[in-house]
Length: 334
Image 1 (cartoon, rainbow, N blue to C red):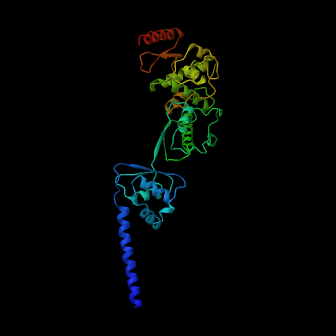
Image 2 (image 1 turned 30 degrees about the horizontal axis):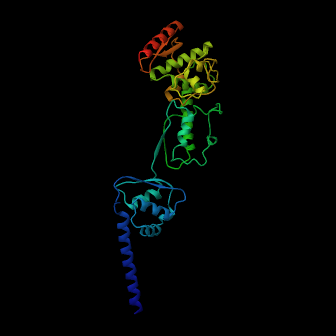
Image 3 (image 1 turned 120 degrees about the vertical axis):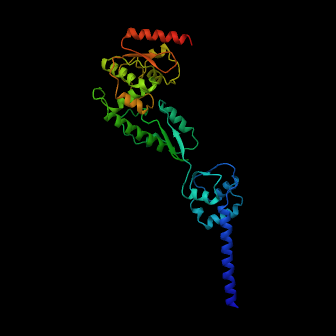
């Protein structure tokens, strides 16, 4: 009798195990009833209850208790990772759980735009919900460039950077700075041997001015040549974007005669030499142009007035004044 009872219990346990496995397999491997891709955002400290309720709210899971039972049975409750995960139309509950266990998070992209001011980048970061800003501080960045650290302008490379949700944006800025340093040093090592710059940081300042002045690529080296020749001759640079930067104005604002006369550290009309720091985040093309200026005798330039982004370059002040008159005439007709 005892032997028969034992056999019965074994058979019952075996059948229960087989039935449970079948139910589990059907439950976890059944295609989900979602009509479009859905983002599952798991916050730090989430447990199996929080995750289960969230999956129910997203209509990915229909039975919370069944989900929790199988999740605990398979050890999933010990592998809940914070982050954003994508539930796709072809997914099953099993593939979603595997994404969470393996930290297969959604990869987002953050773009730092060339010619942008660093303060605008910071303001954009502070308004981005996907970042973890709890311990955000620029003091965490390991700078490689001997620079004016009262102003980190220009020390970050404009590019697109991948990241996952809830990261400290300092990691993106560190990548950006590291890349800027490598681009700058590579360009410095390949520089024209005749230029009279003492440090890569000076080249970075020039590159930032080129970035704001040159709209079309083939004019970058020409603008660079103007800057270098003016510096060598002791002439003021007289670059409008530096004036706007010193006044904390946007670059698309009109510049007034009173702006040109208002003295700041960045006013290259009232002060000779380079401004104390870059005025924006320059691109690789501008950095390379800063270190390889053209060989002409051009000292002046003004916009053509044709709305083509191009400039009229002149070697003499007389030619330049004529170009300015032509620009004003064209601008008045628009």
